Length: 589
Image (cartoon, rainbow, N blue to C red; front, side, top):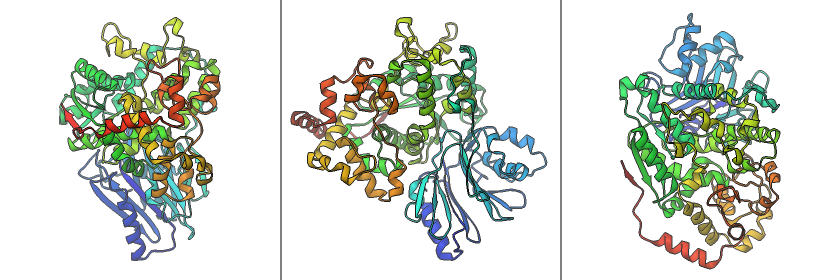
């Protein structure tokens, strides 16, 4: 991932303003440590921090068309850039960068080209012929992007909040699947698939079609000129990504440069569920497996850095981002710059454990639509910023546009969880890859129960976070929470603790408004809580809050005490556990 910053029409073309733009762009240097670039045209500035994945030698940004009248700064990957170049035969390309096609597509088609792009991307394009500009974000919001407005009439675009929060009067999340045009002065939706309407589909389930669509999604993401690997938790989603990658790596272009040996990476507390399962899958697939261990105290010590980088106070996101943040640093230290990851499957297939309670296929389908539309605020944000913090790129094949279209067209009756018929969560995906002749995975991995990442790294991780927060947030502080934080008032001490840290880094009202809120059980939306009356008294985003579904679910009493006040014995026990001398984050291969 790269970092982009654009300051457009600020009525100031001075050297001091250029220096300020460069200073703000450096706040994004962790996203792109390989090179920095800036373009100035009067009072328009485009800055870029590059992570070189494709064409490292000549693809520095900003990028231009032939006569350098059209300038673009891009974060992301355009997987179909070779096909698009063939459609642009009359254009002369200056680099081998996949992102250069954006400048030429604009020259050929104007603003109406974004839906031609197959990839993950955020970009700002300046047309110096009339000083107009456009900005756009990929369909689901895999890449992070924000937009702000200055009192001087300027428009600001940044990959992260920290690039613009101190200089804009108002700023907000740039909506996924939309384009902002200076000519119209507003947004327009460029991504509008059939499932957006939330009308219940009726296409019969075709396991082979689903399998082929996902294999294609993985294969196209093998486009890289640098070393890469796969994140492997041992759950269904990451294991399928790893299995398909291992299967097709030898025939991919990248194998000629970096070989056919796939590297896999996993993180967890000593003895955690993910570590054991990931090791088993890695052995089955024959990957070079790297296992990272962290302690509860390691994670707690990193919380402030994590919140600064991921720019949220959402509890689930912080819980899951911390292990990923620690793992990304270790992966980058091995010389790897890109990883494949399994985000998005649970939203597309109704894989979270609370979907066991979906009352009918109509409700299930609507919930999956809502979850996909909100991904940019949760799992996409986590995957993008946790890895970008260390100059590592994460690619997510489950969020491939073509694959989503196939998966979301399936009659949702097939996605309904029916244990009496042997259909557990994500059964349609599991069945599609249940191949007796050439197995993708061992059966017990293919049918392993869903484990949320923040749970799978080790159950004591979340328990430790709650205990730590209870030591720093008093009952009296909680009593005044609604007055201190009237927007998205924290309901637990853990949430209050994260909010305090977030507000210290990002004190603006616009910043707190970029973070979603509302009650949740096992990552549900607020609406889905209505599916089970018992959940209203057990509001926790952990998968273990799915009482009667998760094999290691919280007891009702335990859930109640952790949501309110932790007993002193629990705090004492957790404190003793954290004070034990433990090795630092370790790696074994």
